[in-house]
Length: 384
Picture (spheres, rainbow, N blue to C red):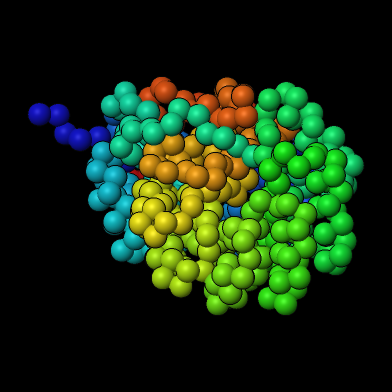
């Protein structure tokens, strides 16, 4: 009997990619996206890839690309070198026993382990998660240029190209009256038949949220995302009870424990689940199971991941039994260039799910070398 393959090396690389335009959120404006790319080499010659991504460094949350890389190189990789590459749950349990928090680093490594196992077995990652319920995922687009006329033209062109037909607006960085006027202008430009959602990114206090949500509901906005601070669950609960428009928890829900606590308080109608915030693909499925049990809608969220992270998320959301609110896995489309051989396939308003072994994404090593922050051809692998 052949011995099981072991993990030989883990390399993490910071990659800085330019965006196609300024991407304005309540807490920052992005002109580039930084990816943490993981390459996990096994003793049977198979290499799995993973990714973790944040928004605007530390502007969005308490983990940054630099801290993710540091956690992987200093703490996670040494725990995994020499471990059985096929016993993924055992490997991740070993990491969790010694590394608290750091869900982004854990997610990136779990993705690489699943990619390698899929390649090893000749199965797509979604098959390792129980199989896909759907072969393509509806994907909305965020209109975040800051200019209403430009956003309307962008949306109309995307509808004509059959790439997106649902749109999210980022608000919260301007006075309430300006934000409402911006949303209203886009609603007029697109008409009443186009579904618009709004993401406040925690920018409002409860009093402002009451006024803002009432106005947005009157305009015909179909979903309000995280209007108040993530830790203000009581306000989120009161807003959900007060208004007919669905309220979605985003920053407030990371993992299954958050999903349970929010459900116990009836604090949100919808959960935006994100693989990095949950800590990986399996933890995302656990959070989705809690949402299903509580009758809460599921939405496939994004941290504007690149192609590897977005396809990893696509595998898990394809495996979710229910996905009432679609996804926003448009991150690769926001990038001017990429580090994969073939970019994800977006058509007919959906992201097509790869049906080949592993993630179905192959690194372009030349592009990786070009865009990596250290611009070094020398490996920084941790080996044992």
